[in-house]
Image: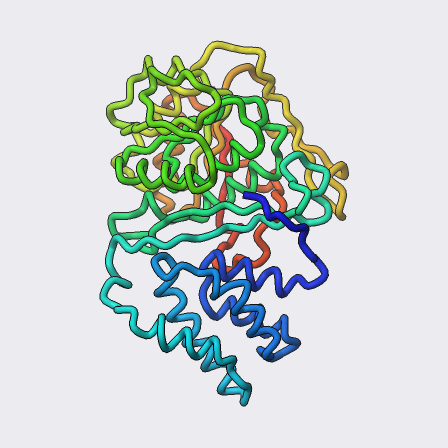
Length: 378
């Protein structure tokens, strides 16, 4: 969803403050941008901006508990520095936010609505994914509980990294059939659609995650339907497929013949890795096609994307997979590498060769340096 008006990039702190609020970054992060916007303090004009551009547009159903924590800290910050709090902030906090009950805030199924704002820097203005406004927003219904039974509906660091990868190198994905393994909230698929992939197939093994994913696609005005692997006919739609790795048919997987396979934070459970490697092997084992894997990545350096080129794809015919992962358990990661080698998959760590644009300068909860990127082919 593009912004209707072009951005004023002269006030980065204001833009970052609003973007951090919409993404539900920790309250301290939003407040730090507000303080920076006010030249060291949260002035009444800054508060007015917070009220008009953030709080007054928030939906209590999705943002209520975040608003409660944010406003409490914001008011305390202003009062502790001897400032005057706007009446609108006091009244909204007292009448709408305080009455919210806290018992649902810790519930395992609490969902929130985040808006991820991709802010395209000056040096990215020439790439095809960059809108005229230099801002592109994705709305995502997601879980605040990342570890207790709702992992598929959480936004993981590697999926954010993959989204930046897709937007940084749109030529790689345009007019290609792209297949994502373990698509979660659907963020990567939305970005693939934005850069005009010819077909986007999103999969997940959990039905509730799949339903949430489809809701997110619809939130972002994208046509989607639930499909099986054997019924992927309409290229105009994003295909949402229920795909438990352990029961996926090799024959069905090979028939898809995607050009590019993607996966984010899918190397985490040792008991699932055999099935994951089998799925990747089947998807990569396609007949050679006209798709060239010799795409050159131009790495931004000193503001110029033409400063340096690295050939990231191997010079072979066939499909290529990109798996982004945070290594949380070295033994699990090494076990995946062992299984991949046994399956005759060639795995290359290309983390240092790929430099994505920093589209999310306000997102301080996201540490890009923790993500590793693997390129896999037969």
